[in-house]
Length: 313
Ligand code: GLU
Image (tube, rainbow, N blue to C red):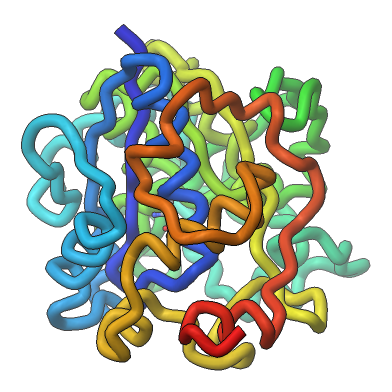
């Protein structure tokens, strides 16, 4: 049985860009009789907004999406992530790191403008025998970093085809647990995709640089890796990723104004090459939906799209 997942982060409200990714993921699953599981990525404590979990789930239901089984929340799973970290530690794949973000940036002599800032220069690699040693020597509680020994990693992407990434340029050794002991996104997502039996990850292409790291973690933990497909993002007219600066495109905003979900789905569908801009229910798009037929380029949100949603276009 194929299985994908919807994995909203309740750090902000769902907007048209997230909604499009979730709709396409759901269509992919429903068109091929695959399961869809729901995971709430609520690990980033300080950034999780009150009520955002309920709102995200409610927005997705309103859009006409559903999922199979219980919702998995990450926040109560600290012990599971700690266990995975212990295995990585025992296998010598991670090391304690006391660098602060500023130091990491300052230490990169020729900052390489990658997608996620300069690569980690490896300052703490092989520096401490243990977390206690790191703490004794520096007075700081260490984070844990995964040691990336490979130069590059290729994977076959369901939308992009063969993707090859330079692991050093994409950040090098990466953090798997913060100094608070909390699992970082990269570790939690791998542990949970395996725990939820996810065979196919479909998500925005802003996460392409994370995929090679996640593949390394699946291997290091002896877990089966899913297939990956990355979808082009929705951008504003300025070419930047859709965000507040482009106006209020939250689903909750349109809901509050009385916009019908079929209209929102109709816009997302038109953006995705699934027909002309017209109101349509998500379930009526399932048919023979195929990611392979998705237009390749990024999608641009225009002011006219907003007017159309509001019934004025
Ligand atoms: N929770 C992440 C996000 O909202 C998605 C992570 C993933 O799909 O791997 O960006």
